[in-house]
Length: 306
Image (cartoon, rainbow, N blue to C red; front, side, top):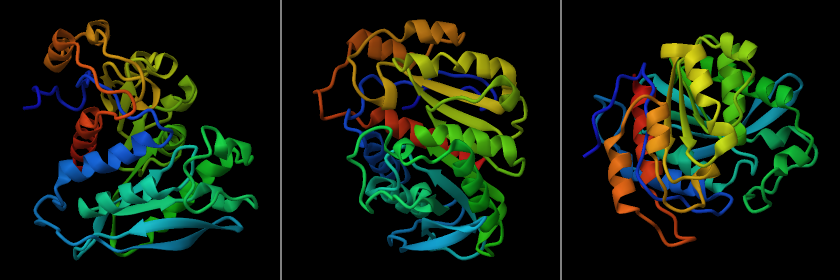
């Protein structure tokens, strides 16, 4: 049973000892698996269970003078649905991200995963995901342009009759996390923002964010995780974060260790952290542990559905 949670307006520390796969796209794969397990194919609250896998398709939307490729999956349900823009990491739109989109659609969302590399002349292969970190940066994609393309994705969904315009959210993985922050800064109508680590914008940029944001961070990803307390102090109730003990950057690598220092910094003691610390849980290197991802995705679903 999950420990009692504090209200979404308060900071918290998420746990479950162990780590995720250290493979470059291991987080995305495990997130897809974890979300499937967490949802069990359950649709939007009150809409019943969806058993059939929704059909996905590749379309293009306009951003300035460019046509941006995107993978869209619609839930098997009638009426206007909430939507989520899935912003890939720096490996691009690969099969793992497409799987995540499929699973969000099974959970009742219109899942919209833009291929931000599709703007440039030098594009990633369709099934990319093994080139290594920084691949998109080497293509020369500017942060400003990618954010502009994501804002255009939001505007595109606003015109979709099958989308609930009041519930369009965005989720960013790593490289995509910063871009979700920028979307939240520029789009007051964005329903929710969720970041799986990623760089946090400047104080001035954060001050302009009106959208509630949920952040998932790894204890041993020191550079990125160190910013959460400052962000929480600045944003207050608009920012909820969880730190996953024993996890390194990308929720991968590292061995089990104490999570008590992080819990103390957050002003709380998490029973899961205490239990994991007592057991000193470890996992076989390379095989990963889906439990932190599952917990993170359960929290993400609850946050988006609020």
